[in-house]
Amino acid sequence: MLTSTVCKEFDSLRGDFSDELDDSGDYISTSGTLKHYCPDKQCKNYINLVKGGCLWLLERFYGSKTVFFHYSNNNIDIVVYIMMWLGYKLNKMVNTQFTNINEFYDKHMKTIQECKKNIDNVEGYSSYNDLINKKNDFLNIPNEDMSKFYDAFKSLCKLYTECDNSDSDYNSYLENTQEFKWNNSIYFVSVILEKTDFNNNNFLKFIYLCIV
Image 1 (tube, rainbow, N blue to C red):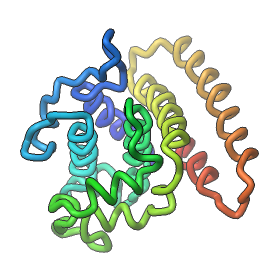
Image 2 (image 1 turned 60 degrees about the horizontal axis):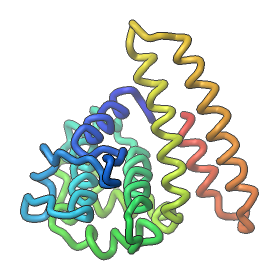
Image 3 (image 1 turned 135 degrees about the vertical axis):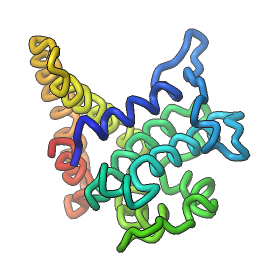
Image 4 (image 1 turned 90 degrees about the horizontal axis):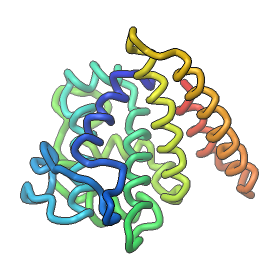
């Protein structure tokens, strides 16, 4: 379930690894705490930053029994939010090497120790790999589409965090609500209509995850 607390963790990550570009067209990154999650604790390139960001998110939400139940209440749908973030980052690569998450996951994540190690004292999910495998229907969705869902996720998160603030400007809230409904509803409908395989309901799952 999406909550303002979940959204604020993604906001924290964007503080170290921004979704925005600087004037030269590069992503703004201060590394910060991410350096502890990058290979050899060095975020030397974009791939390392993406790996570090993904591991940071997995640890924040699923790294131990305490956080597993605090954030997700034993619900692994947050993994899909992480996948949306990952798809967005991969889609923004200047020299696109990966068309979907699965290609990146197989090459850079699946075999590393952090993804294989056990999650202590959590029943039903033995590792990060296990969590991801239980949502593997989403791994082969094109990054371009994942990126759009991430944009929708960010818009919805903005509403959650603004509503969570007692000093919110509710006029701004209403404007954001209309923007989200208009822009993203049209996108969701158009994507579904363009798909020929209506037995594949991945996009319907995404709509559900973005509005619950």
